[in-house]
Length: 131
Image (cartoon, rainbow, N blue to C red; front, side):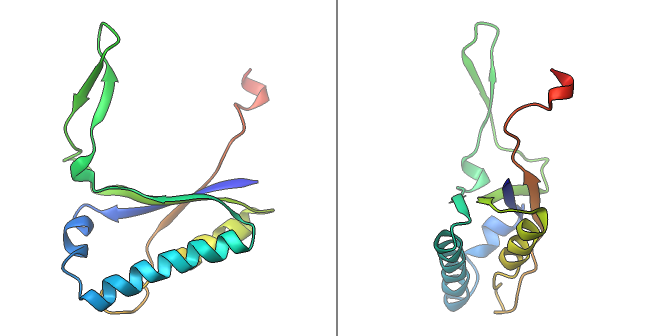
């Protein structure tokens, strides 16, 4: 079964990350690289990506003529999607265990951040009972 593990960042996180001590930034990035590498080596990783700052994001909707209409960033949001992993594992418990490992990425003081990682099963299609 495939699961999407979503790492969210508080609105202030993108701005404060750059103010961390250089060693803490390097430790955090090193952890994330090593974490993804270990998932790849175990055969559990399908995909993983970090996302650009929400300051660069736009909301897009189709206008009346079908052309894209963009809106600014998300000022009302408290958190933003910072990155994700898609894993292919035999059970929900395994997905939860992987999410807990990601949650323990080191923070500015070197200790685990214990970030909330949202875990959702990737559906292969709509449930048959609604078709």
